[in-house]
Structures are given as C-alpha cells and as structure tokens.
Length: 292
Length: 196
Image (tube, rainbow over all chains, first blue to last red; front, side, top):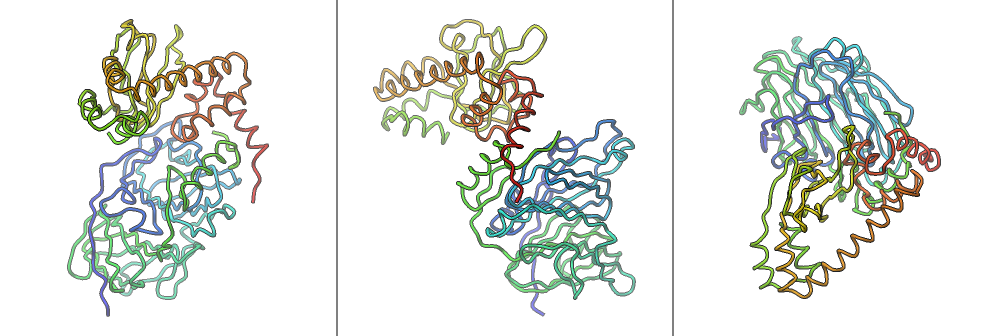
C-alpha cells in the first residue's frame, strides 16, 4: 500500500449566482491552489449546495449561451434540471442522474429548473464540472449523454455499508456509464455511517473529492466536513474513506492532458488565436441557433 | 493600474519623470455592477478610463426606454463631454455592466498632460480624431444601415461583448428591437452553421 495523502482541504467560497437558477460555490478554477493547470483535466467545478428555491411560474436557470473545447458534466443530487441544445438534444435530469454534454467544436445550450419543480419549489443541489478535451478532440462533433441513475453501475460496499456509483472510469472492475475522451474517473460514493471504501489511482492523475453530504475521515488521519473539497497529492496511489456520518462524496481523478490552456468565458482552447476564432465563429452563427 | 500605465507609457509614450508626476493626479475607483457613475442632469468633471470591467453610457427617453450610446470595456474611455469639458449638466447616464475598476481622469489632467508632454498631446489629438471618426460612422449606420450591417459592425468593434452583455442591451445599442437582433442572428446561423 502506497498511501496518497491530502494536499489541501478547501472550504466553500461565498456562493454566487449563475443565471438566476444556480447558486454555486466555485472551487475550480478560483479556489486557492485549484487553478486549471493544477486540476487538469478538471477545469471548472461549481457546486450548488442544498438551497431552497420557492415556487415560481417562470423557471429559473441560465439562458442560451455557447461552449467550445470541453465537456460539461452536471450531476444532480436534489431537484430537476432541463437542458436544450443547438444539436437538437434535450433532456431532464433528476436526483442521481448525470448529464454529460460534449461541447467540442461548439454548441449553444440553455439550462433551466424543470417546469414542475419550478412550480412546486424545493431543494436544489447539483455539481457542474467542466472536463477539458485533448487538443485533437476539441473540434470534434458535439455529443450528449443523458445518463439516468438506473444506467449507472454500482459497486456494493460490504456489510451493506453503501455503494459506489461509477459515472465514468472504472472502480474495482465496474465500468463507468459515460464515455470519455481521456482517462477520467468520476464516482459518487454513497457511504453509510461507519462504512469504509478505498480507492486507487495512478500517482500522476489529478485526484480530488467533494464532500456533498455528511462527514468523511480520510486515511484515518483527517476528518473533512460537508461542502469541503479535498485535493490529493500527486504522490502515492491509495486512499481510504470512512464515513463518520452517512455521506455522499464526489470522487474525481483524471490523467492530466498537459496541453496549453487558453480560456475565456465559455471557451477553453489551447491558444489565444483559437479563442479569438471561437468568439468570431459564435458571433457569425457558426454554433447554430437556439431559441431563448 | 496596469492598463492605465500602459496607456500613458506605451501608447501616449510619456517619459518616466512626467509619468511619475501624472499618475499621482488620477484616482482608481471600484464600481459595482449596476452602480451609477453619472446621472442625467448632473455635472461630472471626470472621464472614466476602464482599467477592467465594462461601462455603458445611455439616455432614458420619456417612456422610460434606455438607449445605449456607448459601451466601454478594458482600455476604453467613457465620458460625457458636455459635462466633463463644458461644465454643463449631462444628458447621459453612465453605469457599470460588470464589476469595474475605473481610473478617474479630470479635464485638468488632460490639460496638464498635454502641457508637459508633446507626445501625449499628439496621442490625445489622434485619439480624439479617431473618436469623431467612430461617431460619424455610428451616426451613418444608425440612419441608413440594415440591422444585419449594424450587427456586423458591432461584432467587429466589440467582439467579446456578445458574451458579456444581454441581448437587449446589444439591440438597444444597435437601435433595433431584440426581436430584430434575434432574427439577424438566426439568419446568420442559417447561412453559416455547418454541422460536423
């Protein structure tokens, strides 16, 4: 056993609104030592911790906006969100579901609270990640994977201590539901109080976790509370979690792409020229069209 | 004041001793999104150099509708000339579209910089000519150009503002309805979108 230790625990920042429907704490890239290069290939993590939205007739959300050069991954913990994009894809994801959208060469999309959820109001809790694409796939065709919770394979922890949902990658020979363009592991570990789970990733993978609910002890040494983010060292491979309260933990581990990053707003490319081109293409309608 | 320093040193080519003298005469101010820097009817002695962020100047008509005269992102100067240089009450509102850092420039600053630095005087002269050229072009577009042509000129002048401001503000700047702007963008997409 070659233990992977905690490099830093990051507390949630003051939340801000994305549109009027997502009240998020940003961890990547604005968190202390959580910039895009350090977290490569995870270039953004916004976390909407549980928040009550009162009933409304007009669904809250984010209006039409573009993306190019990466994938957006939305993981729903509470509430429902509806998605429409310029490739003609649409879908609703609810508790336990995941939406994996590959923007690649360019897409327009909008994200709103689902209509019924909006009308009734309720608690909303989601994580959104941006996963960078290798340069050779940045201009490939857009793609959409709407993944229901039932489609996500689960690894049962022993003694009925919970399970690991394998959204992407591989956990103890259980294959992830989403296809990825580079090695990415993304799991929801749902662990009962007192339950344990262990993980192993190559040392050079950038590895982190977000305590979505509960409280977790890492490697028997440090306890991490709800809404806190843990970045692991790029040394060692194995770490273990013990839930000191019933917990949900989002686990992330990916092979760094080690390619130059040029980012501006909704575009993440390799050079400034490619960013300028993305802006130009978007302005000229080359991303297509989507009604507000 | 990285951008303002660059403006004085690199663009206006002001030498170090003069720069040291002049930089003391300006003031940096943080403006929150939505905060007004100038209200119509007031006199404001400053012009606003945008260090970072985004300002807009606009008028409000009798029906309460806003008409955007100018956007000013990084390195732009936004001001009401009648107020800043002629001491008259302004017709304009100026506010921040994003959280913005502005450098407050007084008319005295411009006069003094022009007196002590010939290169600043020349640069300011060219900048003024350029400003007038833009205004002429803008008047012509507003009087005679199609919505599409106005939009094409807008994205050339302000490439990244389509990502930073809501559609209705762009429509207001172009003097068209938000519906017309949607139609222009939809037609461009039909013409230019090639799915891969």
